[in-house]
Length: 133
Image (cartoon, rainbow, N blue to C red; front, top):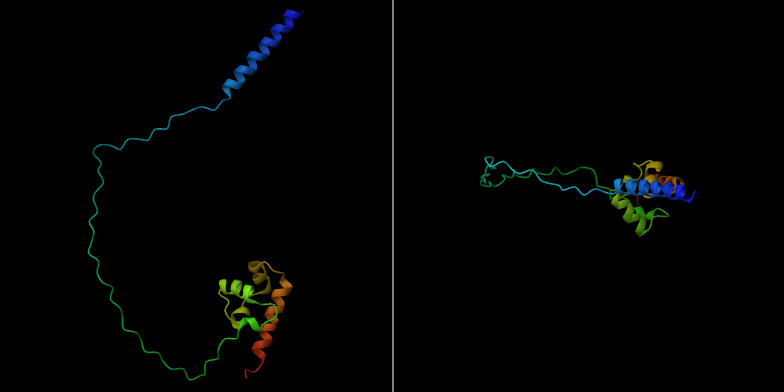
């Protein structure tokens, strides 16, 4: 009986040894293909740089309407210097730019609640309705 146990134990040991040897990572040698001898790359010739011709500037037509300066975003409650920097990164520099966004889209981009952005847009619309002094 002890000899049968020893034989079974030896067979299991050989089996696990062989399976571990087969599962080891292989080392492969990576070779790069050699470039054929007769295929040299053509040498590119540098062309002369020509100066770019600039067109004369068109005359600016004066506007008959008075230019209204954009309303500042800091007049809206809840928009401070940090939030102003975030809005400027989104190309929102004035109240007029702010009302072009939807509250949901603005909330997603700024990672703030949608109620907050909806309040900002309402305040921006109120500021635009007020007559300028």
